[in-house]
Length: 245
Image (cartoon, rainbow, N blue to C red; front, side, top):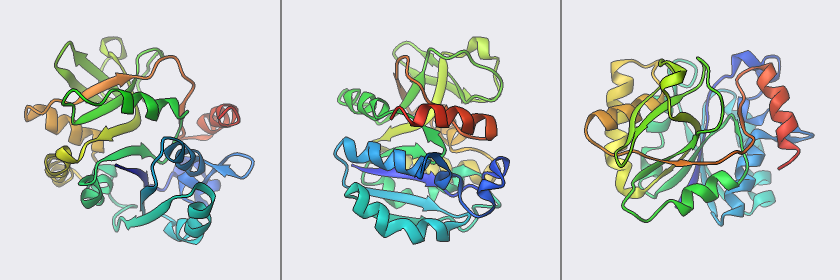
């Protein structure tokens, strides 16, 4: 199993930081970036290889690749997304379809979270689950969150931002354990998703899997501090959290 980071997006709501940097390289604790925190988490759970999907301002990640490898003891492979500024991240994850065949822990390039999340996902393995989503069942939800409804013993039933927050079981935080056995089915679902609409999210690919009868499981992460950084308010929260990790 290896680490996988989606870091191809433009992050326009974080300008001027993202005028010259991808969102994953925005600093959150001194010189420490969102990507640094994710790579640190991966190294701490014993991963030695990481693939990063790059697109917008990818040269900044290419320039830092060797330094990041040395700092975290990782071998990093960069996967180019040629439509990063045109299409949404269902296509971005599909670009890493060959990486998925090795089994991955996937982390969005804009999520600040503790290593306990990865540890929770690893601990949830072993009962035939092929895809396990990290789920926050504690946080109060609103319209922007990626909300999930689960059913006892049946896993995810719905995953979308477009639902009444009161009906949701919790929020998907942007970290997933994907076993190698799920790679081909997930890649096919992602392809169907972005071919239907290039603006769709990879979470819509998860919904496509569920609609096909595939069980997508969840692992509650408990009461932990994390944030998805989309805008400057989120960045301020991320900087409060990141210094603790």
